Length: 145
Length: 145
DNA sequence: ATGATAAAAGACAAAAATATCTTTTATTGT
DNA sequence: ACAATAAAAGATATTTTTGTCTTTTATCAT
Image (spheres, rainbow over the protein chains, first blue to last red):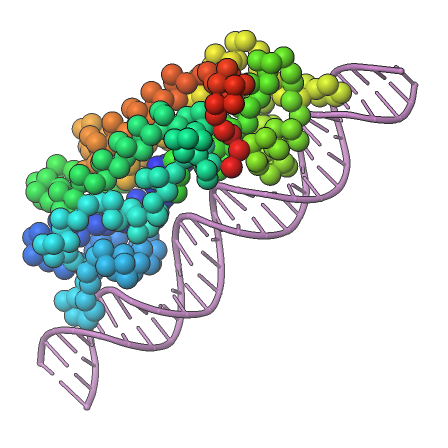
């Protein structure tokens, strides 16, 4: 088990790649994205379709069409991508899977697990979709394999 | 998506419950465990079988048999349970699902995600299987729903 | 207008996770 | 020894996640 679903991992990688290409002034087609983030093309298409429906990513059809972000979207937190794909379980869920775990009715892990959740929440809210554009252009980061 | 698989959540809840009962001097049968942690009984049986095979939990068959922990086992870290069920992905894996993500070849999230992983690792290594026995006996924690 | 392009939508397929049921094996108390 | 108990093992079923394929719709360039 990983922290995020495979679907969500592909989504985040794709989003970072598209953000970089948007920063460079391009729209990107599925094929190019899938190639650069090493994901199955038709599956990724479904994922981006969902992000598009949810308004997280922008797209246009037809020649020179593709996926892209505008300036406002580049400033949205990565958390929006995660929520769109995996829901908000990771931000609010109990470490032991209990529905009614809370401050007043805690599971044994509650206190420690809260720190983990907070760290994840912090990471996903302080990271914007466009945050790594310059680093990616400079080749400082990998999104592939 | 949660941090741990459903299987692992059941495993941890079961382990905490059995630990408490072991502390009180009892062995516990599947039915009693499943009832107290609200899990499907035959599925839980499979999970505990695996923990038993891996030497994480102890068991004996026959009348008055059941699952239990000895003193040494009660001091083992919860991490052993997680590793037995979910593997070590959660301790070492990349946040974006990349196989070759590393210090020298990092994904964009690498630095921030390391903090999350470290927090999880710390939680699972400082929490022993028997850590909550007294709290559980006093009814301070829930393992149910 | 029309042909080419590329995403959207819908139906379908495979694999993995979750869950159940039946039979076997070990242990205990009588 | 034997009947009762309880976990182990094996076979099977269901659901969810992951992945594919085909058809439709929107956009662009000519």
